[in-house]
Length: 308
Image (tube, rainbow, N blue to C red):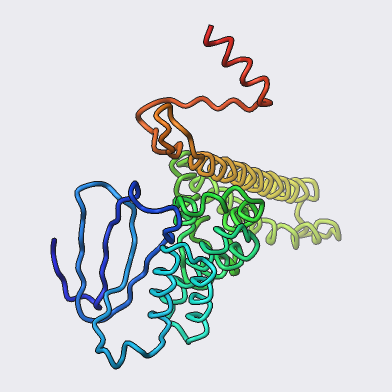
């Protein structure tokens, strides 16, 4: 264990196997004198909690931080509605961006627990767009597994994939990084598309006045057919290059949609023969899962046949 004097915060890793099902997704701590980083022996999930060193007279003062911490405590005891009230109160007490992010995220966890998908999506949308919440947190947190099964999550995920001011560009940026690994020369192709299109456009600008002079005729007029051929070549080149650029963009969007689908499927819960529930991504490098997209009866029938 190591102690550091960094903004009075306590960063700890709690064991995901021993936590209760009503433990909130993030415990954010925002105090001001001592920070302790604690790493247990077993691998656990990341949580950020607060270590308050205020005097007893100041402890009675209601702040956004105290409301968030009280809400976390209530949530851990199963008092989800009371915790929800505390998170809403924290948002009304002029919170800092970090406190607002924590309050909105844990408020979304409460709504997800209560099966209020639309309200949970609204909270997450605000946290993503205004407070830099990482969409990967929404994808990875087991406490939001019920929310990820709702149509509201699919809408939120599609907005995050497309990016925008309302929801931010963080998730789309992460998807693009994965896409660049799978298609490393797409950026180079686009550069040449744009460069050649610009060159053809500049050439066309010089060709058009010559074409007008050729049409009018005269002693110093350029050859009409040659000038018309140059203009047609430039126009055709621009059309072809723009078409290739749009085609490449379409392929990229299809690839991003496939990556998004794979990321979602990787979080599917599975029940092992030992009755332990794990996410599909946890089986990476261990087994090779096979996904069968058929009606349930047909799937059971095939499994029975293979077992014979």
